[in-house]
Image 1 (cartoon, helix red, strand yellow):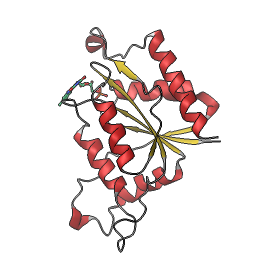
Image 2: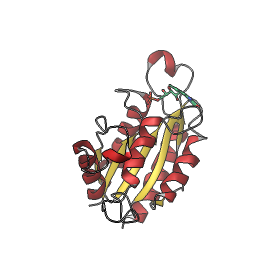
Image 3: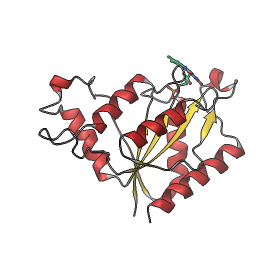
Image 4: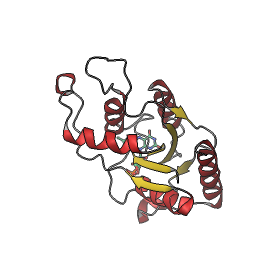
Length: 182
Ligand SMILES: Cc1cc2nc3c(=O)[nH]c(=O)nc-3n(C[C@H](O)[C@H](O)[C@H](O)COP(=O)(O)O)c2cc1C
């Protein structure tokens, strides 16, 4: 069975993107084996602290290497990728071989896809993250990349509401991703 790793660009426990991750996991059901990456302890990237690789980085790289596909779910910060997620992708983009900076990274060649929960559904951040993922040599599935808008009343309740259209799009994105994994 295909293994999908979810990466939430927000560390906000119970936040809107965490709720979107949960919804995607629920919709995937038994169509794949899904896990969610814990990347909270990944340090800021500093080039002279790259080797020996920090333990938290070794651990997230192993999770990424073990997966067939990586599904990024992210908020949008000032139309951009949140800093924490950008830092994580920087670590994941780096060669595993200290002697060869152009060598394979943990994420090299992986199938990836992007969704977002943000005020307007992350219409700016999604293409930026897709471009970054292509640049770091992943195969990006762009079909049906879903942006879930945080509706005005969701801010008061803290609950992300999914429209019927959101669910249709998420199911289409799941189908498009799984089609690449057969
Ligand atoms: C620094 C910052 C910048 C933000 N910029 C944007 C933005 O450009 N577009 C947008 O739709 N929402 C923006 N937001 C709102 C986020 O979409 C919102 O905080 C969202 O809840 C974050 O998701 P989370 O609950 O999963 O952490 C911004 C929030 C922060 C904290």
